[in-house]
Length: 451
Ligand code: ACO
Image 1: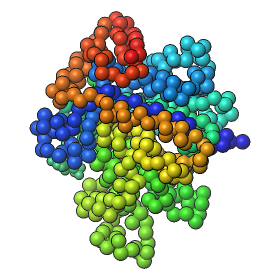
Image 2 (image 1 turned 180 degrees about the vertical axis):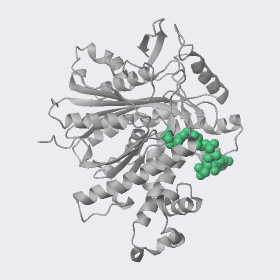
Image 3 (image 1 turned 60 degrees about the vertical axis):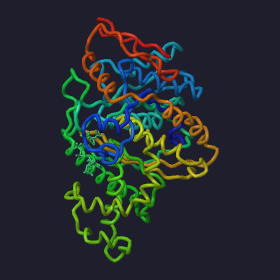
Image 4 (image 1 turned 30 degrees about the vertical axis):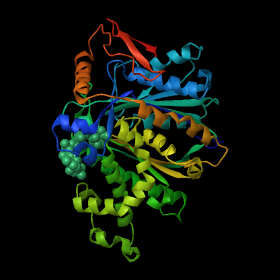
């Protein structure tokens, strides 16, 4: 017998307390005005100074979730971390998080880290769901932590950075229920974004290739998701109209708008000619197009962005609050979309919503799945009310100039493998309850404190 309504019971998001304005970064980088803010659709970029690393990000978000939701360490039976920010090639971040559980003598907790670029959080979530639905489940919750410090070398990719963490509590009788048996995946081999230089925090990126990989993964996952629904419910044809919200991994917001338009394009290609309505008149000529030849077709992109604008504003734009204000957090990105969506409208308007989720990680791994928001009485109000701090903390962050931001990144670059090391930044502006690095000793062992 399956446990009923397995899904998300609580969510916590954490982003660093400082950011750089993308508008100021355009000027500092000497690019044309509007390139980052309009061309990429980004407003601000959060980042970590030398006080924070992947361990501290995960400690902060995990401790905050347990505290805010009054969850005892004894209630957690599985703990998974999804990240692509690697500090130790052998020891997991999960093992660092055990410091929060060991003190309560809780050591019977399954799970370790999962890595594949921005997809690691989704893989960790799927592991957590599988555990709750398995014979090994013992009634406790699974906790998924996804976090990254997303930094790029100076150049065109740098404005698409970000940093943050998400903790997701998974269990039965949840207000956000994973639709059973409905998951579409597309996994391939590609060198679009990877981190072969273990001395550096920066990836090697093939920008255009990564965009093509992302869009081709989206095409495959959407078509396959439609097929899988058809198998479950032969009378149903999935289109954009089937969802109240569509959440995407967001490398930058403009790519998400293009991706939404692409799904509208696929809906159009799937429409038999006699059923094509007048609204498609401006794009009718594209009906014979081959999807794989259209990744960078400007006319198709423009036509479908225009055609799908109102739907995009309704179904996806609200999910981009954190993506535009913090940037690409990598593994937490698509789940920051879920948080942003949940705090975007009154709870009464969320009830019964169908949410489509598209997760992509370079390399490449991708999945599309869906979530149904349960009816009243399921704890939805509790989840959403607990997220009321998000807009307040976004507004309370501290603005750092591009000159200072560049210095901070240079400091990280110089010191990321230096031992012994004591961070130079001040803890003054950190949010209360944030973990920070106290020192790295001569044996590379890291110790942390909490503000
Ligand atoms: N006003 C308005 N728009 C402008 C302006 C301006 N002044 N200047 C440029 N633009 C537009 C461009 O026309 C372009 O729009 P388009 O995408 O519709 O063509 C957009 O701004 C970006 O400009 P480009 O010249 O294409 O940018 P560039 O090549 O310098 O870098 C890129 C963009 C490739 C996304 C880079 O930031 C990058 O490599 N990022 C990391 C990789 C990435 O995020 N990939 C996505 C999937 S993989 C992942 O999640 C990591």
